[in-house]
Amino acid sequence: MAYMLDILPFLLEGLKVTLTIMGVTLLLSIPLGFLLAFLRHTGLKILIFLIDGYTWLFRGTPLLLQLFFFMYGLPFFGIVLSRETAAYLTFVLNYGAYFTEIFRGGIESIDKGQFEAAKVLNIPRFVQIRKIYVPQVFKRTLPTVANETITLLKDTALVSTIALGEMLRNAREVVARDLTAEPFLLAGIIYLMITFVLVMTFKKIEKKVGVFN
Amino acid sequence: MNTLRIDSITKAYGEHRALDNVSLQVKKGEVLSIIGPSGSGKTSLLRMVANLETINEGTITLDDTPITIANTPKKTHPKIGYVFQNFNLFLNLNVMDNITLGLRYTKGFSKEAAEEKALTLLRQFSLENKKDRYVSALSGGEKQRIAIIRALALDPEILLFDEPTSALDPENIKEVQEAIKVLTDASITIMLVTHEVRFAKEVSDRLAFMDQGALIVEGPTKDVLEKQPKRLKNFLNALAQ
Image (cartoon, rainbow over all chains, first blue to last red; front, side, top):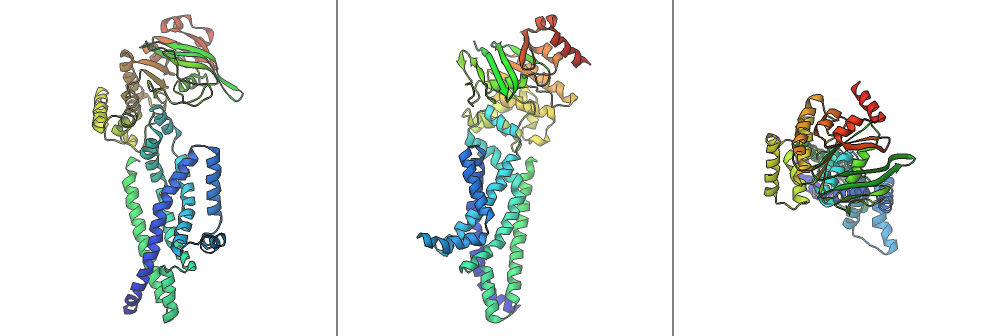
């Protein structure tokens, strides 16, 4: 136990990186997903083509490959990104693609009648989206978004491959140094604790937005 | 003198001619009911007046100003209100917000002014105790009456009803009909698509009968029901069975 407490600060330092990547990704990829899903809903062929191309590309290739490309591939084109920027960019674009598809499904599940009602009332398009569709899409897709968030937490461990010191990488370093499995155990416990908090938080949000059901 | 004039409207979906050269006119304060079997084109006609669908040929004018453009999507004219068969209330909003959304963002009312106007209307229809309810907690009849209030709140000069009682249980039909009746007594112009011939007879100044995309007969309610062309007679007999 004393040993665990000893190594905890080093793991928590890694946790900071883990949570920052997660926070930045959620903060940017969810609005990106909403924006692209609604742009796609306009029905403009060129937009549909571009957005579908984007989601195909980022859902169709491994996250790890995308991470390597932004970190080690872009320099061949004269673009050099810091490790953090490469990580943020990869995760935002990758998760943005998934969220676009999730929210597209959400928009399509809204009964067409509400769109028509908004039209005959001449409610401005932006107000329609903000006041009517976003809340409903948000509510309908919440369980899926919760799932994605948990996956994201675990996916952040991939940034260790571009030498970013997130929690699992730090745990592995301690394992190599002290030749014991306990750091892995501790990292596992921390992941589970965060997941628990996430699950409880999403349950609370679901309950709150479920009021119009 | 608000006159809605529908002039030689034609609409086809692929091979199917939904509307074939239909012309109609509704004068200010008049109640025109359109009856006819399913697929006769009556709902399509109403949707075109509200620009929910485009027309292929012909024009629709309000006080001699065109409100539609053939084959071109357009906004609904602000003087036109629409009540849907399936209510189409906004599910994430409570009754009050359903009514005030249009007032605030289309008409530019302040929140307080919008709520005051909504409350007046809710009182008029004895629904003020439902103002905080979400749509899922309302009966079918209440939903439709709220939908009527929502349309009415924007002060339309013409109100279009698309089979407003078809999605309702029998016990809810009467309360919605009563609500519509209140409006027919006011000076608002109404176009009502319905299956309820008895109700149409009761409230309409004029009656139109459509079949297979064509307007078969139109005129003062009494005259149309007295003359009864063969197709209308068949339709009414079928309904009575």
